[in-house]
Structure formats: structure tokens, C-alpha cells
Image (cartoon, one colour):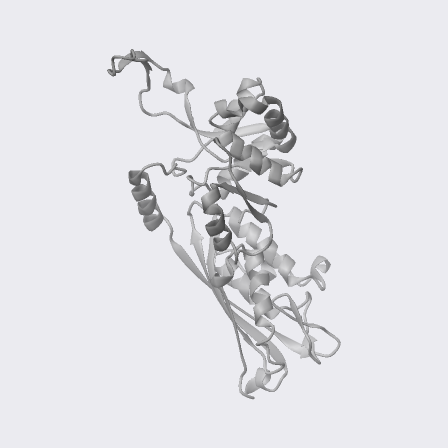
Length: 354
């Protein structure tokens, strides 16, 4: 869902591929690829890189076992990687860490060898971000040695390539054991407050304008009058999202006095809204909207509107609901003078998110 991500490659076990592809069938867009992994983590990453080809300036390698990594973490790691070439997140070690002596083959007892200086230690997390050409070159140079490395930064270390570290997140846990999963469930239950927003918009119907709703051009004798393309559905959704995030309304962000937005595609403006509240720490959960228009009937066009909005919002299509209704001949909308839309949305605030 991060706005900077142009392509995702999921590398998984062969026996999981069918289920994964089925789970992604309704995911908006075509930027997700699923490929089989290799014998080791490094071999799997190499297969993912190969599937990417040369796309993207930066590559982020992330463990699916860390489902709580946030957009903020990816932002910070990516900025540093763009600057120095490679960056990983790490958190300070709070426990005393001791190195052990290797036991003799006939003796399974463990003994302390020495205490490590914990101020110089970091527990490394993912996502690990690299300039694409650097990571590709490293994998190509190491070839048969790939199985010796447990993370991508280790490959760069082996070749003496500098790696920066930024502060990771304590909540970015790696789910390895049942107790980790139990802890994850507690975090998700306790720290995901839901915020609700309501949006409304209306425009007059006039001749000489296209009728655009939900990013779909609907054949009609009249279109909606407005500074942009006057897409009342998208405007109502944008207002609902902004309201849930306490970020004002769409007019504040895209004033009708600004010529830059004349005849602008409302979906493009909605994408800007999405980026702004994502940067503020919000994630969408679902949208429910109703369009009020006397004619034409919209039932045939709603199935196209839903994936349009889902793609912009980074939501599965089953979390976007669009309905159409009339005013039964009553009032300005009933007389065919205009159209309106209501939208209700929920945002998750202050929560870790992908």
C-alpha cells in the first residue's frame, strides 16, 4: 500500500504458490508477482530480483514474518539507502549478550566464552533497502556462495560495501514461535484505533460536460459542473478520508481558485489525499458510498467504479462498497438538476502497517 512501491514480488514455497495467487486474485492492479523460492533465503531473494528485472531505483527486501513494519520505517530506510546505497533497520540490544564456547562433540553442556559489548550491537530487522544495481551486482558476484548468508546485508559486508543503519521499531517483531503470534494478536487488538469519516459532495448537471463518476465516464446528456472533473463520488470519498484523519476537506487541499486543478481528474487528486494521510500515519480499512442521481441508471457502471477506487486506496475490492439511488423525483436531484454522493470511511490510526 506504500505509495512509492511500484512492484511487489512474493517469493514463497512451491506448495504455497497456488493459494497465494488465489488470495491475490482480487488485489487491485497488476503489480504483484508470485514466484517460487530457492533452497536458502539468499537463493529466494535472487529469484525475486530476477523476477523484478531492472525495475526500480531501490529494492526493499522484507520478511513476511514481520507483518507490522510501518510506512514510516520504510520511508526512513529508503531515504538513507538512496543516499548511501544500502541501509538496514536495527534496534539496540537491551539484554546482556554472551558468546558461548562451542561444546565438545561428546559434551552437550554450554559454557560462557565472553560478554559482548551491547552498546555496539543491534538486532537487525527488515525491510532492508538497497540501490537496485548494488544488490544485483552483489548477488551476481557471489554466485555459489549465496547459501552462506542469512540476510542481504551480510552479502554486502562480505564484499566490504558500506551499509547504513537507522533505528528500527520495537513493534516490528519477527513471528517465529507461538508466543510471538500471541503477542502479535495482542498488539493488533490493543493499538489499532478506528477513526470514522463522513463525506458529502454535490454538483449541478449542465450541458457540454462529461458525466464522470468514480473515475468512469458514464454516457449521459448532461455532466457535472465544477472546477475539476466534478466527480462527486470521488470528492465525497476524499472528504470522508480527510475528515477521519482530521485533515480538513478537499477544498482546503485543492482550492477551486487554483488553476492547476481546472478540469483535473479527481482520481489523481484522491491519490494525493491518500499519500498525505498515509504520511500522517493512517491506513484505510473500508469505504461505503452512495451516489444520488435521477438518471441515467448506474448499475452497469458501478462494477467498474469499485476497482478504480480500490486501486487508488490500496484496498481489496471487497472493502469498497458503492451504491446508487434516486430522490424519487423530489427536490433538485429528483428534478434532474444535479447529483450528490455520500461516503463513510474507516481509517486505522497510529497502527503499524505495510
